Image (cartoon, rainbow, N blue to C red; front, side, top):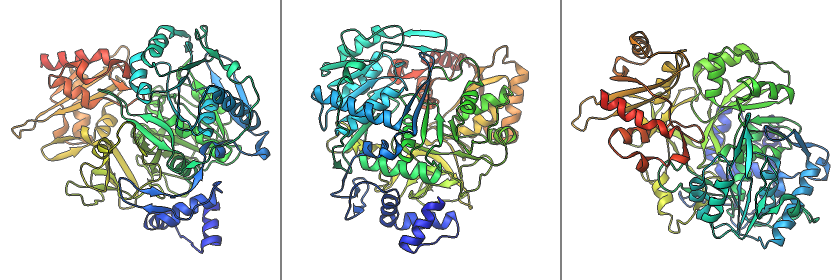
Length: 626
């Protein structure tokens, strides 16, 4: 950030006294800001204009420019000996790749894909874990102008075909088995069903991973057998780079198309200005290839940082495993989830300290205030705790923090530079110090290019612009403070509203899940169509050995009354086996609500697209028993 500010001063005569002033300029002058991001980071390509059109949806970024995301990920000859990837796995031994080795493998994979007939616009897909080969083949495909998409190997065949099959891919890369903790997972039957369900695939390439090879497939070594030229097809700024998918809890998941230029500029900005990645820094952020965090975190390579990969069960052999790995690898940015930090707090984990750690990032859910206390108590007062939020839809973070912003307990530091985000009330007015819909009032480069198979853009408009024309409604419930920080309290479609008091579900969970007896929880509000208070229903998954007795029910009610409001004491507290979540960890409040309203489970949720779907009948039975 300091280097960027010096660049603005020397090249553009701009000086800013504080972060708020920089942010105001970045959203008031989007062409100047995003042009400066291009120039400061030395994007390889030229441009005449930043914004051809600023209309949303349909903003036109850098018209006429050509570039390639992959070219910027692989460094230059000067980076040959820098470490690019350190890979840990429960399936095989630690591996390490320098930028020179990564460049060579990408060139060879590129040549291999060309031999298979892959060219610009073709779709190459993976049924692959979080391993170096996945990054290699993605960058090889991108270098050709081909389009990438992936599913993690824990997905069932139906979920994979529902996603990847939409793209009609010609090449599939896959594994047939892997280890998850101490357990060997055999996916040969699922893989056979996937191949059967995607008849467009002409070539399958099997990765030697786990105990079982992929039958009737080219091997990885055969793909990389011949030398190749490290070349990059120049493509338009909005040329498709990869397709990400919505959670797909019901129906076909939305296939969200992201472009080369938008992802390049957003990730240069995100990891440069907000996560402060320098050459040689090391980032560990547990993810799988099913989550947008895979696409985001690998972009630390743009800044010549090192990615530390972890494939397998992140809690194996115990809760402290990720901390030990991060300390052993001298990680400078450790990324994680709020759930993991809270689990460590409940278990009274004492993580190791290491001097290289400068920043902890979190995303995926709101971070409770108690997690801030735990981090600063155990890891020291000098690091930046940086919870941020964005989403698969934009493949970046538009609220969060950085090294020029203060950290407030229980809050995100504020809007990211370049992103004009706000909270809107029901009338579409920006509000401060009250809950509102999280909106984006100006285009961002990484807003989706389109949805796949949505030629007239109708599904795209319905997804984000159905409430306020020309304003992106993200679907989160947020409160901005008068000092610029913010708190996201949950999905706006899951907001609780009793007696005129609105409350996000995240604040509810902060209170309930701070109790040692409760491992997880889910709350829904069934509104009364006649205008009454409706029913507030709390479902809890208990910790081992805990019992939902009158004493625990009483303490839950007292905690909610004291910390939130009397209106938020639930009408029902029931024990359930598990809380259903998407494969990226989000609680399924809306689907549970629909099941309680009487919709059949199989209409509400695709079982192999979520975790804990088999617990849903218990929710219905508990409600019926009431």
